[in-house]
Length: 173
Length: 147
Image (cartoon, rainbow over all chains, first blue to last red):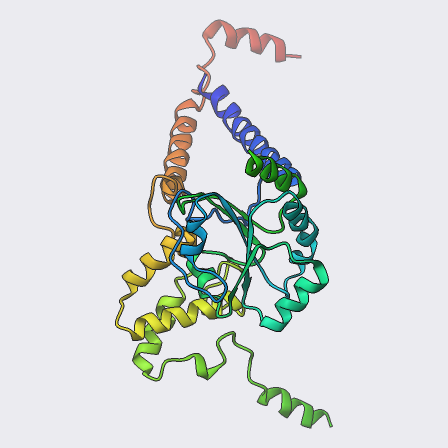
């Protein structure tokens, strides 16, 4: 009996590992699992205090309704990829506010002229300190902040069209 | 020509990430503290490098923040808490023991236990040597092998 158990144990371990790797790989293929991804520490926590040229935390909370906040930069290539998706969100009347992360003002303005400006309000985080305060590791990153200033959702990387469609329907509701 | 090249190559300083002396704190003891602490913090962009080793922009910003806070009199534990609140335990190169990392920390002990168990089972299951032949068997075998 012991011998059979010994024989089956490695097979069981290999099968378990295989199933786990398959789940991880198929998740990576579908885009639902990112091994390098970092969950935001802000989820279900109040938005940190900030006051940038453009808008402050108070301006966001004053809305009394959910706001979509997007960190971007003119030097960021995935942001160009994301630009059409953000324009669709603007067309769907989603309140989208932008924060230019570590970007020269002229460069930001030129970027928005070239790729379209989807933002209702634009703030400039020249030093990148607000980005660190929010725990972002790069651009673009997107947050949903609810009407009482609590962060409800976070996405790192360019927003996929599917995510934008879900956001648009949820914001319209 | 080759000699000049060799000399030039020898003179070239290796490109360390924190090669900019402007980043360092004026107080060497404080700077050493910052470096020691910084090597325990993960760069969130390069992920397997510490913020002291990484050349990424975010690592440079984090080095600056660590130094500013140290110079302002904060200690390592306070800065660590500040960073973990923003980036999670992942920012620490040495993860703390939590419910989630228990398996990670316990894995060496578990491996030893499993190996010990396997060895014990194998020792126990070694077959006992076959019993010596009985007198009748011995006689029969003799009969068979005699030509």
